[in-house]
Length: 195
Image (tube, rainbow, N blue to C red; front, top):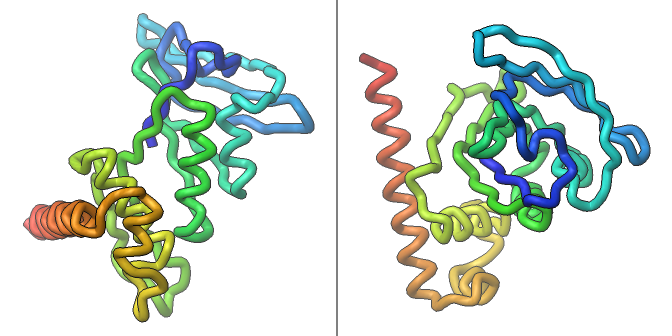
């Protein structure tokens, strides 16, 4: 995910002076303790410790509330790149909603599926979602979390369209575009990894 925090956010990552390489943090009661590795202009790195009061604008709190651990990959003036692992697909909508409430901008950049047992193991699939529009991503996330792609389906186009407050035809077009783009991305990725 790529996140741009709001101007009034107290998070030390909201306006870093340098590129942040690595972040480890822990929330205890109402305090966020962070250990941040900063990459200096001269190519050197140093660790900075910070303590911040946690409030509703805290990005990490949004992850914590849905049982996820944020892994901050990078933070700079353009935003924060965060990776997290979800215990269930249905959590993604709740997480995005919580992040939308505290951030200026939230963008799902990539979705990766990993199998957890040897019996069900399959190759890891990483799909770059940056070529989807925001509306396409929103439609796809809701369709997946509501069970549209499950067998048997737990929902239908009409119900999903009502949730998104768009016509059934518009939703169908969005999902067709998503399916087309993702299918091409998967097979283009598979072709390039075999060569």
